Image (cartoon, rainbow, N blue to C red):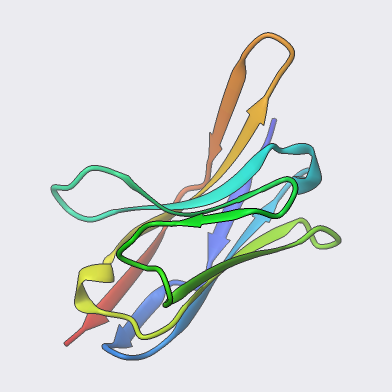
Length: 119
């Protein structure tokens, strides 16, 4: 059973920075990809950033140049560095782990951490 635990959320003023952490209960190198999603009230969950097992990254257009996803394979932790935060970044941020198994794919999710950006 895979567990993902997010931390680092909080309240920050516009233009500020936060770093989110996602600690995994197993080796993150075993996953095909790790990602951060976010969901604002009344909105659908959206992909923010993704990093594959070989290190390639993808970002939502709205966060390119401001957010950076990274990983530490020794600590089994994925990070999301968020700079120049905007009020529209306010959401619950979720850590995601994707695993392509022998016969199917699996998604694992953390409980989420709240990020609130004031204007």
